[in-house]
Image (cartoon, rainbow, N blue to C red; front, side, top):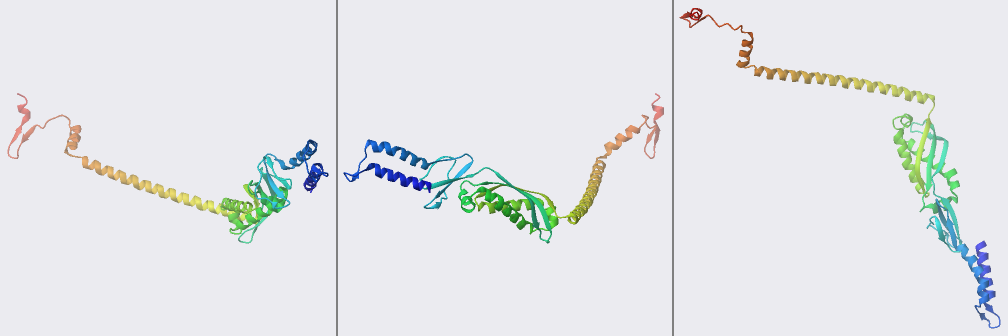
Length: 288
């Protein structure tokens, strides 16, 4: 409204200054120029705006409403009828101390959730158009969306899975779900953290008992695999030894038998030689 009044006053002053009543026409004199320059400069000041660093500018016009084209940080130009609203693009953080989650088997889990997010520079107009300020989005929408995203995923799992082996899988799916939800609002999800999940002492005891039983099964399986491995190793060693003995047996030729004989021979020659009909005493011949 202030800009409209200023424009109207500038036009009125220009008309009064330039209009010559005697000639019934507009005449630009030096005096008129000196009078109009301050008003024109003042009017132009409404056409220049500075968007601070780590902010994005949202243009709103009395004629066309909110513009989808945002302004980058720095100096920007606008018409006197436009208003510029700045929204921070730095990483914001929202912590929800208690989020209630219902699982597939109708059990309830409480958790503390932390959401880090920032406004998307190109889609920042959605934040202004729907919530006007970032604080409104931060206080209400972020917590509602976080609880809805985690709850949607948790209803697909039993409580033991939520608190046990499927926990990381649930984190990943919840992050993807929340990221998609925030994107429609012009916001980027930086990080989702879920911690201090609790389903009560009875459920915690059941999970602990299941973990112990699972560990016993794993230990038994490991022992079985070790025994099986040891048995296989013994079989392999026995086969290798049998094969070695077989090869060694083939190598026991006459030469080896002779070598074994020579090792046991005392160096004395036989004293009698001949065939079946004739026998000769060699010892007497060796005395000559």
